[in-house]
Image 1: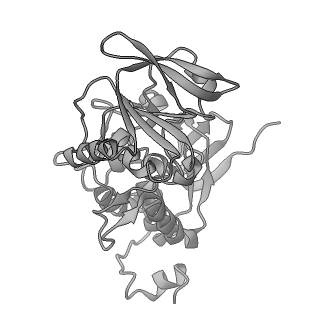
Image 2: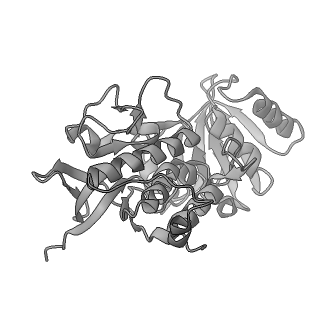
Image 3: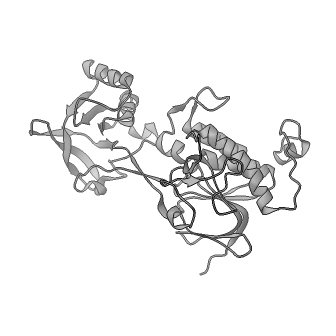
Length: 343
């Protein structure tokens, strides 16, 4: 059965904070949006990697978690009725003769859009997996590469592997709710904030957790459920460590994916744009957020919000060159307030 092509004003690739705010800015200009994201939910890196960790540099919000920021942006975008397509990756993107764009996902959804906004962060995040034989059988059951909900780990016997900020942060944050906590790292030096390292050592001194020097060489368990691991110490001795949950934090690999095949100019896996329209070298395709590059670029969420506002003005002019675009303020414009449902 052939799937019907979805016709819309704008397809936004990426439903992270910057993509979500783009819905709001485009909506103020009466542009309808569909969003496509490879993840199973909105929020991008914020929701995937640190949903419960605080963010301190969002204007007007002295502290906000990644999940709360996502929720607020979804609420802000809601008056414009965006449509979301999760667990989908755009694998085809080409410009039609009339200036519109054909897009197709790996799940077979096709779009015809008047403009395209790439808000894909740096691409798709994938964890660096430790070279442990047979680890795939445990993934998603007792081996996890991120913490989505802390409560899922309450009462678990947790072993965290790694020496960076994520490993130390989650060691400290999960220790109070875990049945037991252990950390393993190949050396006694860490790539994490000194304060976090000091807190971890204090927990060890207080007998609240254990720290092992060495590397995991083998996993033990059945049907995806861990019972323990073999650890090779720096002295070459193999010891057995009991645990029912393993959290390896070896960093993330950013994969650009199909973006490299779309015929857009790239520079070191980033998309060059101007700072007036945030358009790529293909007119009608825009790039905002961490995926773009320009002189003075700062990879901050607030920078992406600014980029979304200017992009929306440019996209409106591209889609409807005859339209008179009058700049208005939401605080004083009755027509904008009606669109937001607050007039």
